[in-house]
Length: 88
Image 1 (cartoon, rainbow, N blue to C red):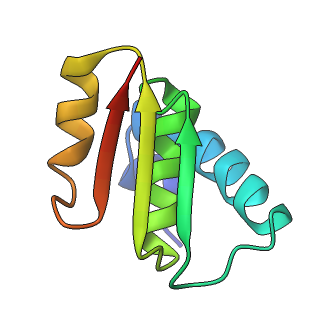
Image 2: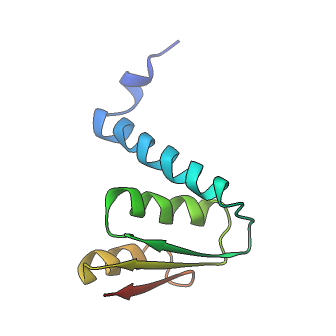
């Protein structure tokens, strides 16, 4: 079998840990598809991963909260209908 390292780059593989941590947090919160999720710190690596995971798990809306307006706008591009942003 082909090694996973030959199929993906190291930067791609390194994002798996962020997604796994975010997944664990969302599952621990007893999330159910169709619910609204609030992600604080959404402009950081873990927060952005949590936004992706929440979308993939069927969140009806993700409220992404962060301090970097430019990064929040990039997050919103992932799903303009289901991601709302709050910059503080």
